Image 1 (spheres, rainbow, N blue to C red):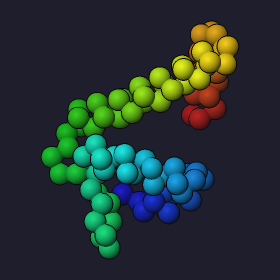
Image 2: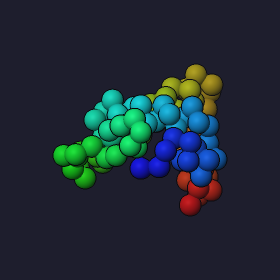
Image 3: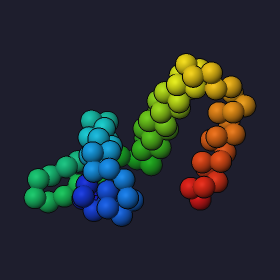
Length: 91
């Protein structure tokens, strides 16, 4: 896998965000980080367990978005439209 710095630069996102994502993936047993050698997909990780872990992470983020929307008076229709717009912009 790319280094935290390289991935941050190539995606134009915060170094801290990438580090946080790598830490979460490591805590979930999806990746293994070896100082001086790099970061690798953990041995024994199946495609289905990887997908389950990633879907769980997306679900957590969706829960946060729903909570923020409710707290700020954003309707379900408005939230769905926002998601559709963002999805289209990122393809």
